[in-house]
Every structure is written in C-alpha cells, then in structure tokens.
Length: 284
Image (cartoon, rainbow, N blue to C red; front, top):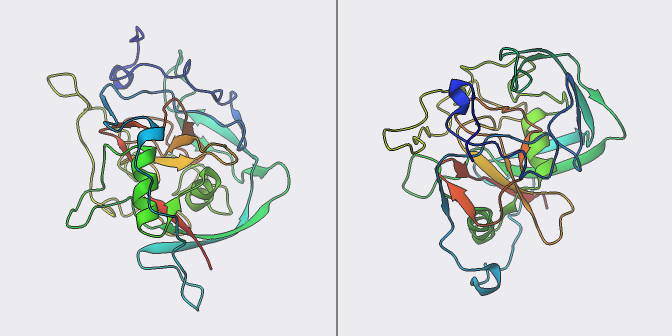
C-alpha cells in the first residue's frame, strides 16, 4: 500500500516499517545494538522474487571453505583485512536532520555528535571482507537482482561466506564508530546515494548502479568501497538460526544510509534492481 503525502524522494516506494522486525531509531540519540537496530523504512517499488524453489528443494551449495589468508596475515586478492575492537552497542547522537518537519524529519541525519559512545564492552574482531561489491567475471557493474541465497551460493563457491551483520558494521564504521563510512557529516556527493530521479516512465526503479570505486570518497576507515549507496547488500544477522538475512547500506535513493541501519523486511529469496552483496572470509 502506497502511503500518502510523502516527500518527492519517498514516492517511489511504500513504507516497510510495519513489516520490519526492528524499530526505527529513537529521536536524536540512536540506541543501536545487534539485537535492536534502526531499519531502513523504504521498500523498493520494483522487485523480482527469486525464481528458485523453496529452500528445501534448492540444490545444496558447495561445502563452505574458508579462503585462506597469506602467511603474512594479509587477505586474499581484492579483500581487505579488518582488525580491531568492535562495539556491539553504540550510541550515535544526531545534531541536525536534513528533511523538513513532518513524518520523515528524523529520517536522514546531516551531522552526528563526535565522538560516538560505546555502551558496553567491545570485542576483538579480525577477518577479511571484499573491498568491492560482487562483480561477476567479465562484467564492470556489481551484480544486482541477487538474493541472500544467491550470495550464500556464490560466496561458498569462492571459499568465502556471507558477511555477518557485525562484520559489515565494523568494516563500514571502523573503531571510530562512524555513522557514515566517510565520517560523521552526511555528504550527498560522497557515495552513490541521495538521487531523486528514481523511477522510469513505466513506474519501475531505475538502475543507477555504478562500477566499484567510481565514488572515490565513498571509502570506509578500513578501505572498503561503496558501503553507503550503490547496492543494498545482503548479510546474515548475528546469532540467527537458521540464518536470517538483513540488507545493509541502502542504495541510490535518499535513505538512511548509515552504517548500522538494516532492512529486515525481506526473506532469503527476495531480490530486486537494488540488491547485491559482498563476501567475507576468516583469517586462518
């Protein structure tokens, strides 16, 4: 159902808040942890259900193999080493918002207070993550119309795995706990995000993907590219059994786009013009 009286940039989709299983951020001070994070509230106006059959009838993916790191501790080619202390529960306080008063005035934060606060003990993490969103061999654009199931099969075939949500968070924000991969102030030109020309004449979401590295300032503290905008990436929610998907980073629309935001309204098979992934691997 399409909501009424939405801002121009929101008319392309319906709210997914009712379907999400995580609440929106609290006003001003965002209380975020791995069990209770802010959700993206925009659903794509155009999506394609995975043509695969129910999970029980899907051919099993190749047995998971961990991509080994080199003896020097470096990660495999085109992967980045992420190492440090991660905060599972972070408090990020928004100083001002971008949108006018109304239903969505606290949707996009223009600037966060520095530094962010860690509420609780940190934990050490060390792993490898793809520097870029997954690009199929011979292609230049990151693959879209990919579901969590696609991501799982592709990552396993490469000796990797779908990233855990905490791993994706840490690779995006670093030990500073940055709200955006590039810092504490939202920059609409830093990443492939905040576009308003979203829908074609038939009402379908326009494909506005760009090749990895096109936005050279859209880089996290660890050197990971495009973790805000471009494609919304599938991850696995920490502690979920069986594995449950979340989508991270939003895409090219004006959305929350901050590192801890998660879209949890979709299942393992959902995919659309806006969905993709990247992989992680353990450091051996």
